[in-house]
Length: 108
Image (cartoon, helix red, strand yellow):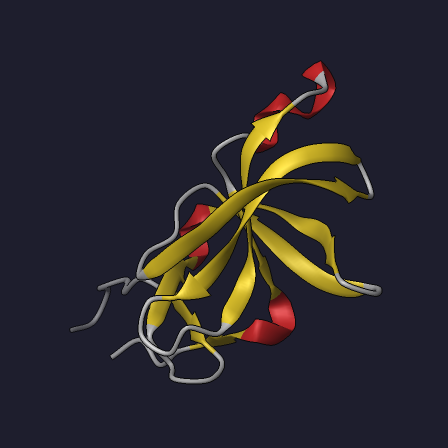
């Protein structure tokens, strides 16, 4: 299979279920929790969103929903449901996954 480029996946750190594609990363400069790195993804898979709630984050107050692994239920990050500040609107409908809660998976 020379020359074939396979997709790079991230999985849940707990059960290894695929949750995102590397190519769907929008921004790698996000923070989750106390100074923990996180990635903003345009699309995720095999996750379930919890209840929507307004939460104060570093960039202001946003309506978010925690996202859980669809298999094991562990919280992996959050989804921006509604963004109130115009300058932050690019985040709306996107998902943040904490880097320490996801793992790179083998691609074959």
